[in-house]
Length: 289
Image 1 (tube, rainbow, N blue to C red):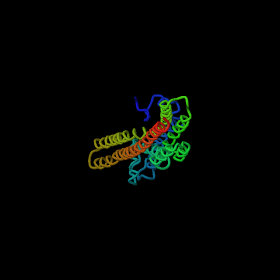
Image 2: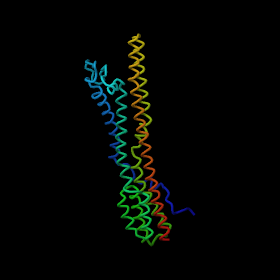
Image 3: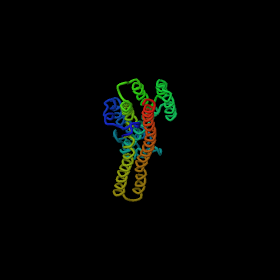
Image 4: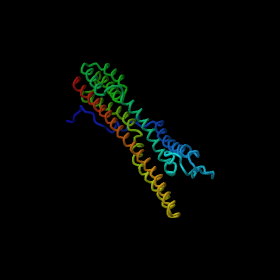
């Protein structure tokens, strides 16, 4: 006979309509990257590319990409890295945006206090058949584990007074309630992590692409002009092109680190949810046979 004390995932929970992402969250995920790319261009064009930052500014009236020369500062040299630089700045802003968004979401989902201590208190109350006190502990926890545990406890309390179902059926009902509550919590924890994982790969490639474009421009000048002046411009162009690589690698590194931080914290919350479901079913099976 199959073990009825440990909850397992079911297709019913996975298909629960309420677990679908809300439209507001989707709108933010759509608009934020676009806004960040636009902000990246604004920073590159009007902050780094301000005419006052160059000893030989472009006076031709070009608006989208003026050909300023002679950057006065090290930071300003990023402007001459080319049109890929604003995209990379935008990618970095996207990473920052979703890092902040995930920090707030995961911090809220973690709740207050230790999950281990919370589950221990619930186990103590259930052992004494004090379900209302266990529910009160869930209200204090205020996180995803507490939300799932509270849903399970409400069904737990309902099953105690149910006289129509046998013990195994009651345990299955508690399992189903836990699975449905879990299906509401987990998608919100993992949402938008795809932006970090994607940029972790794409940013490096974009940086290399910008570097290659810069190298092409530099060697083209070398072939056209020749002589010592061309060699000087070549070394300068290579230096400018490598800003793309630096931006790409830096952005990718931040995205990878934060992605791993979030997945580790989400795994800990998921483990707490699994443990809470196991606690409820075992407690009910032991106390109300």
